[in-house]
Image (cartoon, one colour):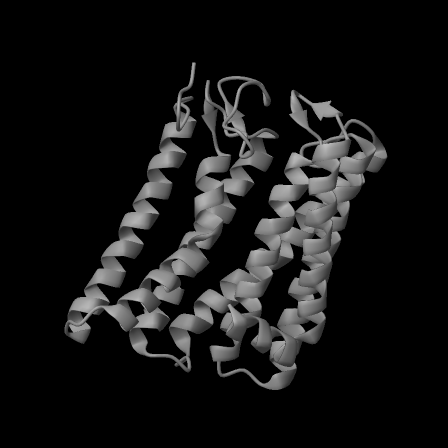
Length: 264
């Protein structure tokens, strides 16, 4: 973690500054949870920005760190980091603004202003999906400054992230995240994944964090397993396929209207 922070500060100071700002928004969200009793569909208005602030800060840190292993010019690296920083910063500002107003940020087209903000969010995320595709294709096409096993893990990670983003598109298509019941109702604490119906946010969540989980597993295997390189390579590939299968299962389960965990 110390190495990641130092790398971000040195190579991507603007991205690093945006990450710190978004983490400050997360702190404000925690304060909102304590001080603000307003709810939307039974959930405190600050739960969503808290989750998004933390998840986005992790994703931005991941991109800023992993891109240092790509054989990019300094200009290209700064350009990609700058686009990621600006688009996701604006995205988080919108989500936090809507929480402060006590209205939904996603699927909210109840009036022109909220509809414009939701449309902006879609465009901003679309730009980031294009960057994901670029980083995925270059991880296949180019030789990264890493051992091959870790590069394969990054490729698998991007595949899973792109799949998770596709699930996000499915939610936008139906203008809801629940399947079988309206959004809201009983959910897992904090995550709020439905416990009474299908919830596409489960597959979306695990998909978007594949770019951290799979490379971290590969790093652990590389540093801790005293076996041949081929065995390590196969372990990483199998883990990546199992992780992708888990996401496919949670997506299928949600589309059948079934909750990940039924508590009622």
